[in-house]
View 1 (cartoon, helix red, strand yellow):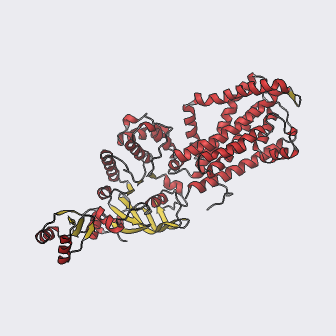
View 2: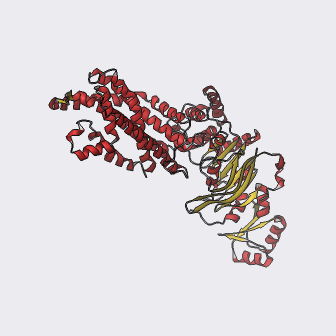
View 3: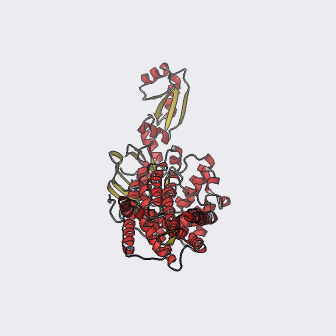
Length: 315
Length: 261
């Protein structure tokens, strides 16, 4: 899959941070990730989207050198996770899906203990911990125990912890899960700031607005394989069109659409029409299919996602 | 996939896990140093002075002096075993600490080695706290009793490794009760601790010598505290060394099998 050139990068000049080819992971008989191929370049935010069980977390864990791959090749910073895990892990920061802060330490204690795992000298660790607590707006909670801070603060502290080694690559698995809008915006803003400083970021998310706002490029995964890859804007345009017209699901409207030969999709009490020329079409529909509400809205990544992965519930 | 017998590659980074556990332990040091101190007092008073009044002497040694090394040996066993079963399980399963640590340059082998090293350190701390109490009761002799400290470390490694094998295979924290009651408690009673093995039927003596790690620790502790070395000394040490290597190697491999998928 070739990345579109419309993302504005001179890709040939960008060093490749992660290179995966034919990457596969199986657990006993279950195939979690199947022959995927991708490259992540320096300085970009690369997103993995997909329903539960699509293989996103498994892919993250292989990059993090925590889960060995079954077959295929994988290079992180040009090194093989099977051969030089410690050298790779030295340069990456991980925000796991599950909050695993150390409850036996305070906020700053978590950062200092973590710094030691990276062989960061105590004085330097102290300095970085102070800066990072300020970066995630937790300076006031410095000496507070982990079980005394809120869920949103914990996610922010995990982000700070992931940055303690000044990682060249930051891997975030559902970074804003369960957070209020304020905390999500703070994390997004910080991630953009990190990208501006030249960091490379790989993330998984279920929030499609998050992916659309943050990611330079993304893939949508399902059943262990990639369905599409591209920039959020390109994917929306290529897969759905620029706008969605929504109407009531009545026999008259259906008959009218059939008459006009316009492709449509029925969703409960609504009918959706994806289009690139919404104004003309909406006008036609308003004229022809009377007795229905006609409203148009911009197409989103969510429309792409649902189109590609279906509407059936997973799990 | 490496087999359970393959020798794990451990780096000096294991020391960082040990240091983490030490820091947490020292935060509540008052609570942590108290139990071995009280335990020594209770055992000496109840069993030594109480029961000892009726028993008199064993092998020409006053009863309280006979059981003093057993108190140390049992403490070596309990400290390391419970640290690396319940303690490690809580850190692994409930606190997800191991997951957090293996995202750093440490490997799972480093983490488990650090935990085992910490379990052995708990044994050393317990014995170090108990020794002054036993000296005050005049039931152990100096300076030979100081051998109890390195012995506590070696024995601690053995029991920590054994404990970690159970932690690696236990389905839940509750099932850790099985080794505690079916292995640790019988060992505490039938390893030549409170009475000589020689009063037991020969078959039980053989079992105690062949399969109970505590038997060998008790025997060596007693040689140190009385002091009275015997020709069996190298055999006990060899048994402990072999068991320590086997338990530690298997436990690290079992843990990798459990956590790295």
